[in-house]
Each structure stands twice: as structure tokens, then as C-alpha cells.
Amino acid sequence: MKIPPVKGTRDFYPPEMARRNWIIDGWKSVSIRNGFEEYDGPIFEYLKMYQVKSGDEIVEQLFSLQDRGGRDLAIRPEITPTLARMVNQQINSLPRPIKWFSVPRLCRAERPQKGRLREFFQWNIDIIGIDSPEADAEVIFTSLDYLRRVGLTAADVRAKISSRRLLASVLRGIGIDEGRLDGMYALLDKKAKLPADTFDAMLAEQVPDKGQAARISDFMALDSIHEIQRVVALGDEIRVAIEQMQNVFATLELMGVADYCAFDPTIVRGLAYYTGVVFEIHDIVGELRAICGGGRYDNLLRDFGGPSIPATGMGMGDCVLEILLHQKGLLDSQVPRRRLDYFVACADGAFTKAMYSVAARLRACGRSANFSYKLGGLSKQLKEASSQNASRCIIIGQEYLDRQELVVKDMTSGEQTQIHVDRFLSELGTT
RNA sequence: GUGAGAGUAGCUCAGCUGGUUAGAGCACCAGAUUGUGGUUCUGGGGGUCGCGGGUUCGAAUCCCGUCUUUCACCCCA
Image (tube, rainbow, N blue to C red):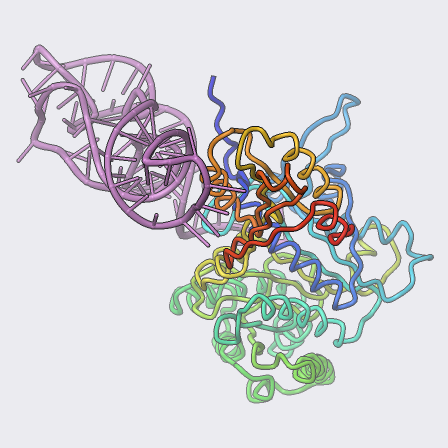
């Protein structure tokens, strides 16, 4: 019986595993150099945890199960609720600011398509307990710090930044009632994806007042925060929101990533729990879905039964990122190939005892070492060493029987030296 | 949930107006090479042509169904 892989999952053969590790190692080291600490939670939680903040549509996209005690559980589709739960549990003893990161494996029962699978990895970073815009800037900076490190330039990706708070205050300034804001978010979030006339038609449906609709369109077309005053009168509320945005941009400029960043009022971020700054990073061409997205969510900890503590963060999945890195040729050039420190070969089947012992002693010294299971000729063994990308080969031959000497061959230069086995191993030391 | 495309060797694909025993490149294995690898040459293994049914003397090829997969829509935490 042949059993196929499950829809939307991936098998990681060694070459794919090397890519995955390289991506995740990069995420982790950039997190650490930006001052974040790693955490993780369980891979499943109570189903309820995801029903609290989400509608039925999202619950339908959960992989859920029942344990033998009848508990309703779900495999995590995101880690933010777990983070909220963990932080709430120890909120009084955690030093602030809380700067945490994680690289959880997540599952969503969505229909797979380009850049979206049912099982994936997602880099999450969050700053909890700080309500100033500099924290939002740091989250954006850290995301860009990673992308820049793997070789993506300002000509490849763009961080598009807006603010829920700014959007809300502008819409209110234009005369949209509080109760209609959520519907507006859902609509405005679609603007970048829809043809202009389709969007205008949908806008006209939700906002019958032509003057209001025109001003909303004007706002959505802005590419600078300085121009907002041309669309709407600057009340106190809007001024504060603008000032916060200016702080974000000023901080990003000071940190040296301003060329990656742009104000973009079309970034709204679906039906999420965002309350302030929101951002997405896209490929410049706009051919792929977002590489990452995030923003400020000041009410989430409270919604999960904790105190009211501000928070901001972002998530970056591995699927879109990998497609983009591959397109730009940044994977093949940077993901390390399999490498072996030593391949131990013997010139004759009579020397195999020494082969096993030398290989074991190399391994005890912390070096990776392989040998051939087949007693083929030396030529065969060197071929095998090459295919395993061995840095050096140890050749055991007659001089080992005569004088206990090994031949050490550098596989890059081809140079060979002879050295007494004990001296060779003692010079290696331990690593 | 809706729509469109694609399923032939491990991978990328050719073959398709029905006609001997289904092919190529890459990969894999072996030999050329009994103390020297990467290159090269030679050979080899590997297929229920996704599955089921139908038409036909004859189906990888035509028809129907089904499954899988890719892409787009919905959604996107």
C-alpha cells in the first residue's frame, strides 16, 4: 500500500532541510542580535483559544481534534494567542520590555496555493509593554535587518507602513460613523488587489455620500503623511496619529533602513486585532503575497484575560520568503552544502582495522568523518569522498604499517602530506 | 466552497490526428581505474503511461467518471 504525503505538507529531503535550517538560523540570529529572547509553546492548544478572537471562517480553517478525555483541541494556526496566554500567566514577574521571538511550526487547513501551504514555519517577534512608536519601528527594523542580511535590497522589497489609528481618525474626520469602521477596514484592505473601478463601485456602495467617498479615495491615494492635511482637517486626534507615524519613520531613518520604507494607506490588515501602526513587507514587483506583516495590538492581552498592556509584533512565513529568495538567486549561493571534515580511505583491504579506529578517533576529536562500506579501490573511495564534499581525505596505506603514518590529502588543493597518526590526532585537539 | 490547467522513469519532459517491445536529458548503480577524486567514455537498473470504466481487432494517445496536484477566486490570523 502506497501512502501519499498529506495535501499542503512538505517533505524536507537533505537539500530542502539545509534551506529550511539556513532560513530559520538566520531568523534566530537576527532576533538575538536585535535583543529578542526565544520562547515556544505547545503545538496544540484548547480550541476555545482560537474561537475567542476569531469568527467561524477561521475556526473552519483549524485542524482540530478531540483527546481521549473529550477535550476539544486545535493545532496552532498562529502563536500570538499562546504568547498572550504565556505572558498573562507571568505578567507580574516578567521584566519589561518583553522582547520575545519564536519560530513556530503552524498549520492551517486552507487550500494550498503559491506561497501558502497547510504546514509552515513562521518567524514571530513581539515587543510587549511599550506603547511608544519606537517599538513599532524596532519590529519593522528587525524584519528588514533579516531581509537585508540575506541579500535583499531596497530594490527588491518594500516595507509599506500605515496606522489603524490614523485611518480611524481620518475616516471619522471625513464623517464615517464609528460603527462603520470595521466594514471600511475590510473594504480598504482590498484596494491594492482590486481594479480601480471595481473598488470605486464597492466604495460607492458603502459610502453613498459622494463627497465622503471622494475624500476617502484621495486619502487612499496619498504616498506621504505630509499630504494628509489636503484631504481632511487636522483635528487633535489626527495630529497625534500623524506624529506617531512620523516618529516611526524618523526612527527607521536613524536606524538606516529608510530607503526600504514607505507610507502606504492601503495597508489595513484584514480583520485582525490591530490598533495602531500596521505594516507589510512586499516584493517590489508586487507579484507575490506579503512576505511578512504585523502591527500594534494594544488590546489583545486584555482580551485574553490579562491586564491592559500594549504590544506590537510581526510574523514572517517561510513559504513566500523562500520563493522570493530563490527568484533572486539568494538561496543556491548562500545555503551551505553538505560538508564533511574527513573521509578515511584505505589503499588496501588489509588496512580496514586502522580505518575504523582513525575514523572513530577523528569523531572523538569533534571532526565529522566517514569511510566507505565497500572495499573498492582507492579511486572509488576518493570519488565517494568528493561526492560527500569532504574537505580532506585520510589515506591509510603501507606507510601506516611501516611507520604509523597517515596520508592527509587536501581535497581542494590536492596537496598531500604524511604525518604520524598520534601527532596528527594530538594536533587536532578536541573541539 | 468556486473556476481553470496538469498527471508518462527518482526529477524535468518528449511521444498524443489510435498501430511492433514507450523514449531523451539529468540523477542513481557498475565498469574503464589493484595507491589518488571532481572531467570523460561505456554499460545497467528503474514504468500497471494517476486510478476505474467505455469505444476499438488494437488505447499512453479518443470518450466518461474519479483521485491527486498546480494556479487563481473566497479567505488570509
